[in-house]
Length: 445
Ligand code: JFZ
Image (tube, rainbow, N blue to C red):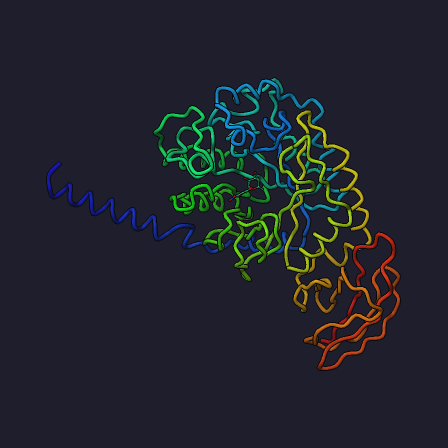
């Protein structure tokens, strides 16, 4: 190579690097009309089912078992041989989500172990090639979801503990270890992203009909790496413009992303220790949480949230203008344990009565507080009283005149006292087991 050419090549390479660094995401993204519509529908839906299910479920020790037990890959690779979910019933899973009042399902297409729970031609590290089951449960679930009118989203882990091209490795292999699971100390990062990951995403967005979106996870493993987000996000939006990109990177949203999600916290809170307190007012919000303490099936975890706790989570999410994505970890045989199913059905029954104050609403005019939250739909405001122990409810000043007030369940008319100082309403004591007392306000135009 001549000196001049070398110099030119170097300049080109530097420029390309700078360009890559300065465009960390889909910088010229203008959401398609169908994407904007999907965002509105997503916000209307409010409640989704999160499902963590993979070969790790066999060990009943959560989805991080490979990492937590510092297993070697050649040992972990025996797991698919035992994964044969003969009781898996896509119809029953979708029906349960619907019975719970959930409007969408987000399921792990692959988790950090990189094992594809779908029929992938990109690698044989997948359920069809490696397990005695030999079938594609995501295909069955997608078909069933379309049949029963519920949206299906795919969780996809960008972090990969199995593929050697996930290199250099991130903090889960270095800082929390060090953990060498038998991979070589070299790999082709660009190939991992552009060929492997984008190849699998193309499969997911091509072979399963209309998909609600992709829920990304794992970027936090290498926060400073170049993840080629521009390319990946553009690919997704090209293949299915209405599919929403939901990244769990715990940072402020980047261009090309369609929803901001929060893990085990309401928007703006950081009790979990890894969430950002920045909340966008430009995108739909979602908060995910577990029904017991775990994401993937954990046989020893009996810290089930009560029906009342789940209802309160959902109401507080709605009052924070957010969805709730509530997780269950099905068993390796494909069954959803009764501790999950019974609670979900109870929440669904409750939503049959209270859903009108949640679905299709947005966060209301009064900031969420300890006493409760507000939601709003048009000229109707719903006061969700969660924690108030006096016969009169006193609220801060309201932006608009209140024309009428009633109690949601019995329809009882209520006297409102509204002044510049605030609003006072009578409140019946909570009935036994009643999580939420909802008062319906009609506002003047
Ligand atoms: C991530 C996954 O690791 C987890 O298995 C599950 O899928 C959840 C929904 O998302 O959870 C995280 C993400 C980041 C950290 C911890 C858990 N972190 O930065 O420490």
